[in-house]
Image 1: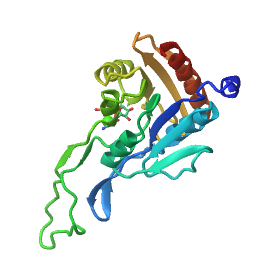
Image 2 (image 1 turned 60 degrees about the vertical axis):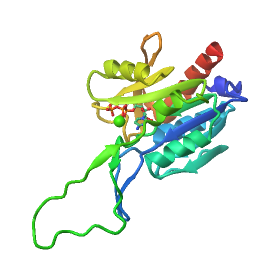
Image 3 (image 1 turned 90 degrees about the horizontal axis):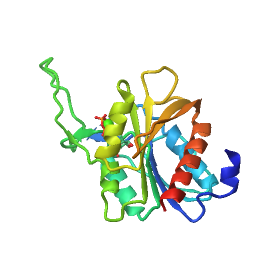
Length: 228
Ligand code: CTP
Ligand code: CA
């Protein structure tokens, strides 16, 4: 929908997007993370800027160039990502595309951990829950007017996704089936289903993340106008 961008559907809006993985430190040289590439979130930031928005992109560690006219804030951990997102408020729209680590090591060792030299014993790491960035922003005193989540699932995709929509108090959730090869996590293409508060699913068939991002921004801009 190229014309939507020319018409500047998001002109005057502040759009906050987070993207990529987070890294949770085990010690000064090691971390827990995931394979998120950040491509979907960066494509969304680019599309939102093309639609005329002022865009803040809070990015975990990814290897991607910053899209034109996008303000990028680089972070590492989930705690830093939450702080950067809160610092970027107020926003008209929040899109949570980041693959936030659900847990982090209970403590980060001050020095590099050493193996036990005289035993083959394993190592047990104690993990604690990370804050939920999306649920925190959707319940914030400065709640963005429209909050969008992503749900990557392998089974009962629509069931789990609509559960997250309600539980996290979202306006829209973008569900994708990551059990299908070649789409979603760490891929160039995606295929998603949008679910809103009316729980009416709207499929967006397989396309490049660039194309899907433009479709998604057009749909969201339309909902923003209707709900404002
Ligand atoms: N999310 C978040 N902060 C977290 C975990 C998830 O902001 N600590 C956001 C993601 O960015 C995504 C949405 O919540 O937009 C759903 O993420 P997902 O991992 O699918 O949901 P969880 O609530 O973590 O549930 P689970 O991993 O157990 O399926
Ligand atoms: Ca999760």
